[in-house]
Structures are given as C-alpha cells and as structure tokens.
Image (cartoon, rainbow, N blue to C red):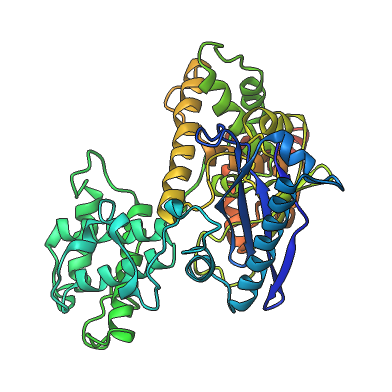
Amino acid sequence: MQKKRESSQVKVFKMPVTTKIYFDTRNEIRKKTNDYPYKLQVYCPDPKGTKFFQTIYGATVEEDQKLSASRLSEKLQLLKTTLQDIEDKAAEAARKLNPFSFDDFVRDFIKDNPHFDQARIKVKPQVTDEKDFDFTEYYDDFPILKEIFDPTTIGYAYQLIIRKKIVWGKIPTAYLYQSSFVSLRAYGGNVRFQVITDTYLKFYTEWMKKGGGGRKKENTKTTIGMYLRNLRHVFNYAATELKIINKEKCYPFGRGKYRIPSSRNVKKAFEPGIISELYAYQCDTEKPWLKKAKAFWFFIYFGNGMNPLDICNLKYRDIKDGLIIFERAKTEETLAEDPPVITVVINEDIQATIDEYGNKDRSSENYIFPFFEPGMSPLQQYKARQNFIGFINQWMSEIFKDLGYEKVKAGAYEARHSAATAQILGGASLLEVQEMLGQIDPRTTKRYIDSLPITIKRAGAARVEAFKKSLENHKPA
C-alpha cells in the first residue's frame, strides 16, 4: 500500500514541479525502527524526472492509516504536522529554483537538512561546464576519455564530441562515435586531419568491406556509412567549432570527392501466417523467460510498433481510459520538432503483460515496467534498455528456431516492422502508419513497404500482369 497526499504545486516557466509525501511500503520493513519510511517525491515535467528523498520519519501501516482521522494522538499529530511542513518547504525551495534542477534542489534543500536521511544523499558537484562533469562512471565504457591526443589529430575532436554527447545524455550516439574512431584508428592510426583524403577514405571503405577491424565477416554499407558520417561531422566540428583545420584545404567529402555509401536498411517483417503461428505457440512452462520474451514481443506488435526505449519510459500516468498515451522518446538530437504523441489501445494482451510483468505500485509517476528506476544515470538507462532488447532478441530467436525458422532475426525491431506491415496490408495509408510509429520523416515510413512479404509482392506482380489473360483469348488460331 502506498499513499500520496495532496500535492503542493510550484511553477517554473509555467511548468509545475510537484512535491508529495510518499509512504513507501514497496521494500522490506525497516529493521531498526520496525516501520516503513516516508519519502519526499519530487516530479519535474521538463525535463521529465521523478526522484525520492528518504526522510528520517516512518510509521507502521496502521499508524499511517490513522493520519487521516480528525483526532490524533500527540505522537501522530506531531508526525502529520512535520510531514506537511516538509512538503510545504520543499515546494517553496523548488519555487526558488528557476529553472529547476534536481542537483540544485538536493544542494539547496535536501543536503544537511535534519529531516532527511543524509546517508542516502549524494551531492554532485555543480556542473557549469563540461570540465566540471564527473566522467568517472563512463571510463570503463569509453576508454577514449582517458587518452591524451595531439590537437591536430582526429582523436582530439572525437574525444571532445564524445564528452559533449555524454554530458547531454546522448549515450548511444557517444558509443557510435567511439566505434567510428576505433575503426578508423585500426585502419590507419590516429592521424592528422590532413592525412585523410578522398583516396584514403576509398581504401578505408574497401578495407571495411573485406572485414577490416578484426570482424569475421564483411562490414555492411550501413556500418561504413554510420562511421563515416561521424567522421564528416568531426571534420566540420574541427573546422567550425575548434577552428583547427581549414575545410577548403583538407575536406575529403562532397561533390567530386568522396561520397559516403548509402544503404536501404530493409527490416524483415513477418507474414500474417507466421504471426498467427507465433501467437499460438505454447512456451515451455519450465522456461518462463520464453513466455516473458513473447509477451513483450507482442506488446511491441500490438502497441503500434512501440520501440523498446518508449516501453522503458512508460509510466502509469500514461494510461488513460483504456489507452496508453505518451510522447515518443527523443532518440536523436537532430529531432528539432516536439516528439510525436502516440496513442495505443490497450487490448487483452497488453493488459495481461502489464498485470504480470508491471510494477505492482501503480502510482502515477512510477514506471509501468521495472526496467528503469528513479535516479538512474543516462548510462545506466542505456544499459538497462540494451539488456531489455537483448533479452527479447535472444529468447524470441529460440522460439522461432523451435517453430522451424532457422537463422531468422526475430527480435524487437522485427516486431515493430511486422506491426507496420500488418497495418499496410490491412489498408492503412502511409500517413496513418507514420503517425502510428511516431515518425517525423515520411521517407522513413516508406521504407516499410520494402518489408512486405515476398508472397504479397508476387501477388502484386500477378495483378499487374492480369491483362495478359485477356490477350490469350484473342490469339489467332
């Protein structure tokens, strides 16, 4: 049982920051005091985030239930007054922060406040510049951060860009830039910008196609293109921001120079018959992880092709009148427009997945599923999301293998594309599918047509040849 009292509202740029006292019975009872703690819950909508700060106060479930009574013992009256005072002062402290940030709130209100458990409080150093950011958590995953580079080399610019991406919370992008640099260094070393000519990149591309970088198989055009688009940005950053190169003298990209290879990364969607077969598949009861992977695969499929990051970000406040209404997570900093709002109808399968695998605490600001937790860093969230995707991919492959489909990619993104394909086959327009998926660029949606099952394409080819039958009836004898 969790209780939330009436909230105090403060406004920051007309965006409410909400403070509430929260009676937390989610974990085991506190052994020293034999009760459950009261926490201050703070919710900030922009940027979205919720954090809990444990007070030194607690109560039993019976005592907490009595707090709403009109007459209280002296002990409970003091507790009630103290908690209300904490909530009111928290609201006032939040009001003074313009704009609001959790780090500033902890520093100004929580730290050294005798009403809060200080053993649980960690104050981050105030970040006013990238130099003030603590990269310690990221060193193991981003070894490039610990290196020292000559400012005239590509490694110097790569490192600065990666640092910026981490500070901004763009962890997937930071990983991609590091992979790009590792590949280029494996080919020719950490060279000066002037060394990289269009011919240099031509040979690098051929090296990558032959499995360069220690891969057992050829690198795809998609991988090569991503790495070199990163390098192109590094050149532009070095010229415009760092001003360490002159683009007119050493820029290998563009008309008459090196052209980055493009590819159509066509995803495989499953035919309706295979989807039916998968839905009817009975998972081994001794392998509950198969049932869980299948449940989330169909959560994506029935959820308008919802992507894994959005599933991780879902909160109970997103459920309204039998619908899940949420804003698609910004996965790219280039997404200048407001994120699309997506509406998903909760069918029996979606509800069953929420009931079985969702958090039992259904308070509005709690995550629906336990993949993310309040207070996670961007790196921790990224790893949690990747673990979620890997879980689905691994065990769905086993299910498809058991169904007789060998070497078939059957993961989270195939579920997304299969959902889009099902909509197209059912008569939905590209505009409708674009809205369903929350895509900004209609060109991205058009690629889903290439995912149509080959049997459907053959049927389409037969339809355009249908006129030939009429000619057969008029052949000369």
